[in-house]
Length: 401
Ligand code: SAH
Image 1 (cartoon, helix red, strand yellow):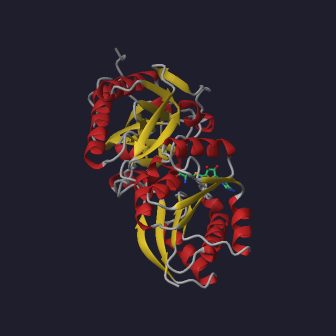
Image 2 (cartoon, rainbow, N blue to C red):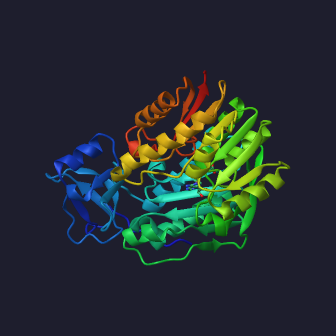
Image 3 (tube, rainbow, N blue to C red):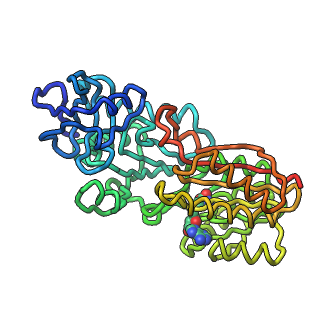
């Protein structure tokens, strides 16, 4: 049985946090984060507490998770007073699963809980067939009673064969949480096979501890496969998500990545699906430069690089990186070619990303049309009032001449 979670309203001693009028406005405007600079008083509030948030005049604004370390001091859980935190967490998990049952199709792998976007700030849960992998990102979700409630509810509703925790040491350090190891916390099954859009993939807890799969691209894989034909190049292919979907659609595919371990899994995935795919290990910038110079041609090219802009400071460098990649790819695409170009940097807006691709097209003397302007799959919901929940851009372009 999970131990009871402290209840904010039962205890008059339950901590109260006072926030500035700017912080209060953010909450009233529908955002769920309040930054440390907008906290006016949090005396004696323990790290990771559930707290009552009030404005300068003492008016109640909502119940929130508090972090004593993060710049995001307050993550709102509810605009209401919470009577039963345990019950609320369970209800939110049920709600998250019901949303996926309604909107997620053709896959047994998807994000079950996406933090703020599922009103469970600081918690991420992914499902890979019969395995679950979760991540806690904050002091509050790391608290033992919260973990217990979350794992009990996930077990009851999804009956996983095993549950693994994925730990990002850097996040724990930033939240001033003690170090912890990644690994199984329940059950003993360490690997499985999952499928999406009829394509099968190996999943291994040990590899997944690093990255997992890029579930956010699931719908973009299927979309890309409806347009691509002929010879295709999947740049930054990782475990072959795009490559395998393009092969399923009949393309002759080459996948390129700088990571040998990633390519080894990609190759096992190709075998699993009875596909012949050529894998090239190399630095995308060098390989694309050489290919473009050498007059190499592809009918379809996918660009899905890692996040170049990890913070606002990196924006200019990131935009230069995107420009260069897209420029080289466009030089290799013949008329009627297809470019699938992605950016997962939150700090690069959809408008900035499109502008960079447009600039690359101009420089490459190509005319391109936007077939589709896409984003992350629906199991990674985007909250209209919390722009930070939306980060993935995926443009599918047609080279008209
Ligand atoms: N398209 C993939 C996800 C790509 S993640 C999918 O849908 O699953 C980014 C990938 O880029 C990682 O696999 C990483 O190994 C690779 N990578 C990072 N820098 C690179 C570089 N300079 N050249 C080639 N690959 C690189």
